[in-house]
Length: 72
Image (cartoon, rainbow, N blue to C red):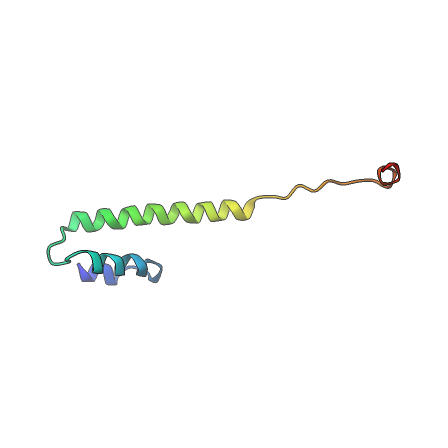
């Protein structure tokens, strides 16, 4: 189990620490570890996609002409 956890990228460090602290790695089934890591990966990808979409949002600006400014 530790080999798998050590092989993960550094952005997974918080998840690795959480698994180490919450679970008894000697008794943890491989399927449960993989399921937990897959769930984290899905959530991580979703958050990255959401942050990219927020960056892409455009700002609409209203344009006025000199004639419109004189009327106001």
